[in-house]
Image (cartoon, rainbow, N blue to C red; front, side):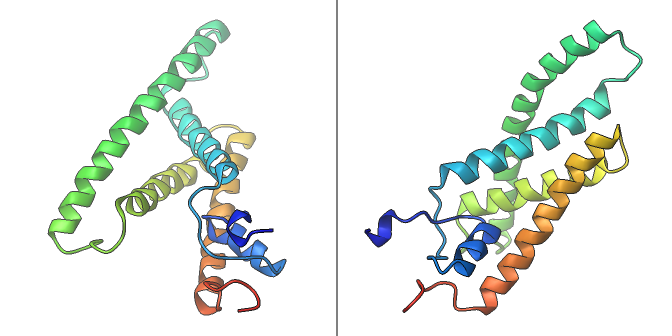
Length: 163
């Protein structure tokens, strides 16, 4: 099998797991499974954050359902606004001398992760138990990913096994 056709991962946790299995742990940015998994989880966090913020439980069920459907589009629009706001912040920080060497897409990922993590922290104090659990799952995943990044940074993970 060609080495370039092996699955590689963007997130450190998946890269560390691959490394522990003896596979290539170099970074790749073309894993559709990771993008879908993390994107859906981020959308769920943002959706639940805004749902607990804007839709009170005292509404009739049919009205709450209608508002929840409309909220899905509202979250999508808020993502567009957040991307724009992030790009403005990145431009300002680069003018100040920060993040000049990091590509824009990675800097966007940093800010996107910070915003999602803040919303997940907020979910710990709101809503029902399952909303709390979704926020806790995100926070545990972020902590595991950061721990994996630390382990990979101090190991020789940038080279394929056997080199």
